[in-house]
Image (cartoon, rainbow, N blue to C red):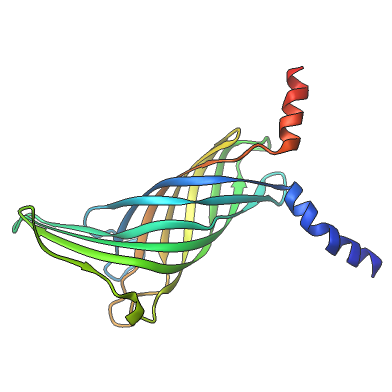
Length: 210
């Protein structure tokens, strides 16, 4: 019993010691599928990704990524016949929980990632233009919808270099907007993370340089 209590008390400290963290930013290339998973529709809607990444070490080659972030989704449809562009943009607050697997035994290098996320729909806007002239510019009233929560899955490939990490991640929602039109948010994300050096890492580097 005493061992269980001791482990429970020390667990937060152990997690902090095994965790590195830092800001994450990137670009999202998004579309809204027409009812099938991973089905691209139209041109990519480009938007920002902004968040913070916590990498919790599990084994020498595995870690969990916990990454609260803002991510832009939506679609961009071009109708060349009528010279019409329709832009739909959604803003989501998401919490991905991702398993990261390094392909090499040494720190850094190429890694695979995969996991799940939950999201909350914050903003929505649709703009349509014909020959450059705005036909409508509609801000969604999200207080009228009860489908603001969404969950999804993701797969990615990335590379670590010191305190820097670059990852290309594909994610799709798994819960549709409504039971009739089974559309899904599909996003290809280009993620860049800078992990703030920990005190122990800085001291280790200083010793190696001396």
